[in-house]
Length: 168
Length: 154
Image (cartoon, rainbow over all chains, first blue to last red; front, side, top):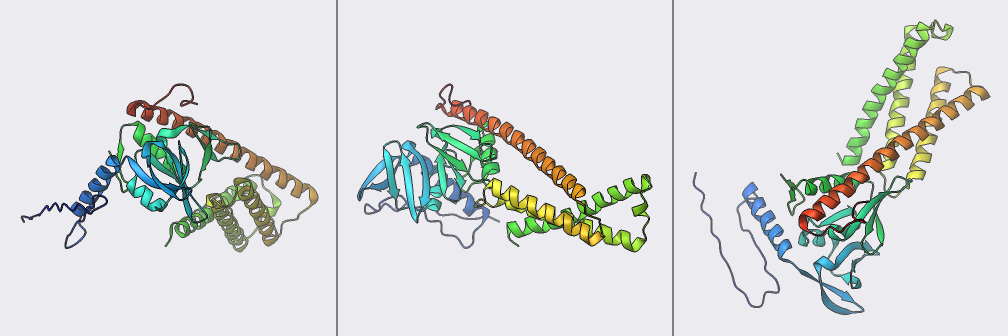
């Protein structure tokens, strides 16, 4: 059975950022693959992210982000230039950021692997993640296995799809 | 069924089976040593196995505490220890064991040693895994060209 597809590009000067809309009769594997590819591609393209500090909005380089965490209903971005607040939720950050660099270590924290200098094991049995600026955080016990397997996959040359699935 | 409930149900079943198997093991050892207390009927043996199964379930289910992030590992271990000890005493009461201070002390010391040994093994396994994580991090960073020397490979 032959399928026909349409690809339409709608140039709108008033659009803030590119938006990909997939219109289909039902959510098939192809639809999911296209969505995943679009997310992955856009995540790699994104070099900056809007944050605010002392009420002033600015854009920071994604590569400068050390970690992002949720505290008291606020999302805090710790970057090389200081601490900022973000309007995105952690979930939105996970979708926007390159999953091969940004890794969730707990329900309320995402880290930039490029900014991690190492991991350590405390005697209490918790895994500490140490950043290049000597700050540190803790990997939630629930996420230790995920972090471990993700690192193994990345080290072996595998890549991570934007929906979190691993590509061999 | 949520992940936690599934895990709890699996532990309940596995613990029950392990408890029974350990109970059978002790029973066979006692019979081999011709222990007078083991000269009991089928009904008593079934009751013993049931209690052993329930104890196994309780011990294994209590381990779910370690998966609760809001509970520190020390507190989770403490509660697990209390559950295991309390369960053992309930098991003993159910089976008509004679508790004296020496028996209680031996049991207490034995369980402390078991917990220390388990904790040590888990710690060493964890340390080995963290070493591997550091190695993988360094390998990945080398591949993407962001690795630095020294600190990246702890």
